[in-house]
Amino acid sequence: MTRRRKILLSIAAVVVVFGIIVGTSVVSYVLSNPGVAVQQNVAQWARNNKLGAVVNALELLLRSDPPSMEAATELGLATDGTTDIGDTSLTTISTSTIPATTTTTISTTTTSTTSTNPADIVANTTATGSQGDTDTGVPAPVPTTTTIAQDPALPYAGPQAIEPVLASPLRGEGEWTPIAKMSGSPVIWATSLRPSRKYGSVVASVAVIDQSRVRGALYNGNELPGGGPWKNGNKVQTRAVPALIASFNGGFRWEHTDGGYMAEGKIVRPLKKGLATLAISPDGQVAIGVYGRDITNDGSWRAMRQNLPPVVLKGKNVVRDAGSVNWGEDFHDKVYTIRSGACIREDGKLMHVSVGDADIHLLADTLVYVGCETAMQLDITGQFPQFVTYSAPGKADRDGKVLDKRMSNANRTLKGWMREFFAFFNPELLPDGVVD
Image 1 (tube, rainbow, N blue to C red):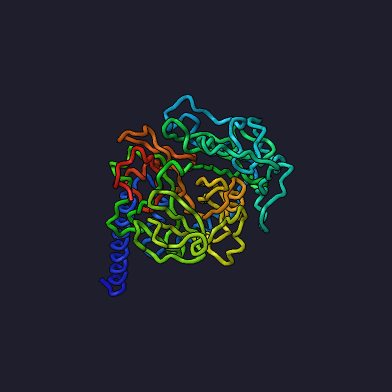
Image 2: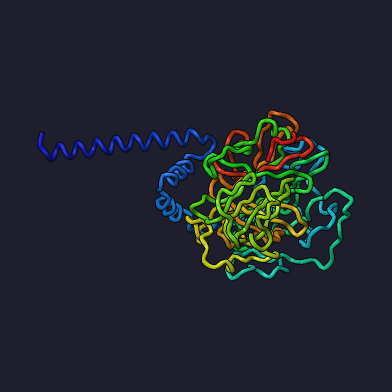
């Protein structure tokens, strides 16, 4: 055998061995995260193995085209007024029965024939158009001239309907549906709408939590933040499962943000001034604000999760005010994908929003339009944005149900998840000391 042939065979052997090692590692990672799309699992494996630049380049290549201008013919909700809450008497809320609690205009149209003609994609005539200097096609909210204060002695009746943006609304667009209850009355409401007059294919799904009646908690994924041991690990504790009401996703991987992280009173990553922060008090109440201005680590918080600067402040899109920010190291502000955000509304309620395909500007304008007062972007792309409610409240055997048809892996908070997430419980059913 010639020297050249020996060298070639040696190189081939190294390549084969390397391929076997890599292939085994990838397969092992995919199998350890069931319920996640293979493509997304492989991308996470690559990022964990210092191949993030390759993933970034591929995703930039695949996701740089704006969404279609053709109007979507269906909304995102994967639930209805009776699903998840076990009460057939609860149906979609009528706008005529909801006391006014915000300044969002009530929709007067609930059903219409679907149109996919781009010429039909127009904002309501009283709106002024895009809110920032980027044309997202999302109109500014239209304030009402009067509001009716809700009686504080009565249970929260739910948010007001959101006026559809497109000229021909789909059935139920912008109307709120109760999707979870406590003690016989709704505690979470959801709606779906198409927020952009420019990109009619974009669909947003929104959930509002009356957090005054629930207890929130931060759970720690086995990869992010990892470490521990944690009381709130990568899945909801068995004893806490009967009290579980809902959950939603956390923020970015840490190489994509310099934000801090505190869990169970322990600083995992230093908290930074000026960043949007979701904080949870010892009694499970959630606040969202700017660290160093609205929220500080004064010993009164059990958990804090930061994720880039705020995108909405005082009901205004402030993305441009943040300067040069990578709103996801792989996406910046140029790529359209599914994005999620969390906010506190003007009425003090907590809201989770998923919208796609959207860039950061379209997300921020949508957050303003649906009623956010202070908002932060959370995780983006693929299956990471998620909002889930759970069947059979009070029982040990529960099943998750995703809010939006584009979401999947509804039981990941019950079986174990790679990243942190937020969960919400019925305090009346939650045993003392089980959840931090």
